[in-house]
Length: 61
Image 1 (cartoon, rainbow, N blue to C red):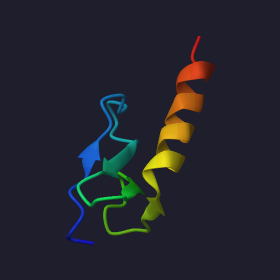
Image 2: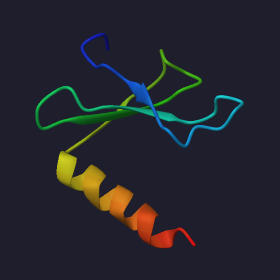
Image 3: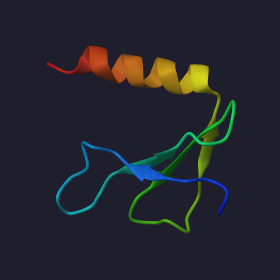
Image 4: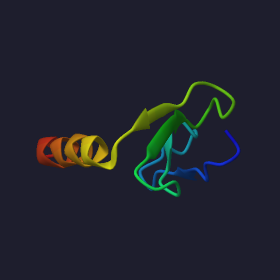
């Protein structure tokens, strides 16, 4: 998926296990495993991504 420009999460572990997110395509958020750049990509609507990340922020101590 060369059209996506993925960026690794700032919360990435030192061993590199994390997710990468691409938000450069309008109305699309793409997510992939940073250790498998050629692997599957999950495509979400921005509202779904926003709800997911908001829920994660609420769960942090």
